[in-house]
Length: 220
Image 1: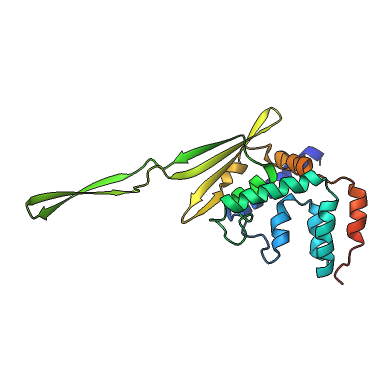
Image 2 (image 1 turned 90 degrees about the vertical axis):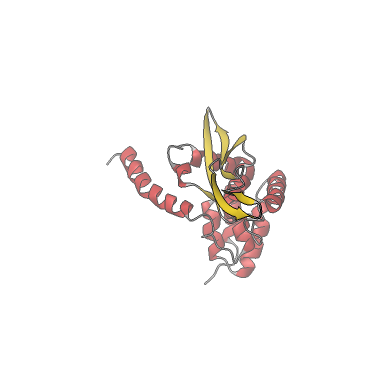
C-alpha cells in the first residue's frame, strides 16, 4: 500500500473522531490540574505523555523546566495572552477561562487578523388586541428583542498564501463553541496551529530537554 493511500486512510479515520471531540468543546480536558489544563494546548505530544507519567514532585519540577526550555519571550507571550483570556472569556468559565474554545485558539494563535460577527436579524412581532379603559388597546410583543446579538464569530488567520478560519457559535446562556464546520474544507488549520506552536512556544534544545524530563521522578 502506498504512503499516500495510508495517509488518506488515517485521515478518514481521524477526522470523524476529531469532529466529535470538537463538537463537545474543550471541556473534556482535565480540569483537576489547573497548570496542565492551562498549558495543554501549547504542549508538544511528548510533553503531555511525559507529564502524565510523573509523580507529583516530578510534575512540579516539569513545570519549571517547561519554561526554562523555551525563550523568555515565549513566557511573556503566554502571560500576556492568559491575561487577556482571563479578562475577556471569564464569563464562559469563571474558574478556568482558558479552558474554552475561543481561549484555546487565542492562546495558541494569538489575535486573529479579523473577526466577522454574524448577528441575529430574525425577530417576530405579534399584535394583540385587548380591551382598554378607553376602548381598544394595541400591545406589541416582539420576541428576540435583542436583534443585534451576535450569534457567531468567524476568526480569520493568514497562513502562507492562504487563510484559515475558525467558526464559533453562541450557545445560551454564555458559551461559545467551535463549530465542526471549522474542520471542513479548512485543510491548513492543523499546519497553522503547529506552526504557531513552534514559532511562539518553540523549544531551544529538544534533545537536552528530553533528557532532563527523563530524569524526573516517574510513577512506578
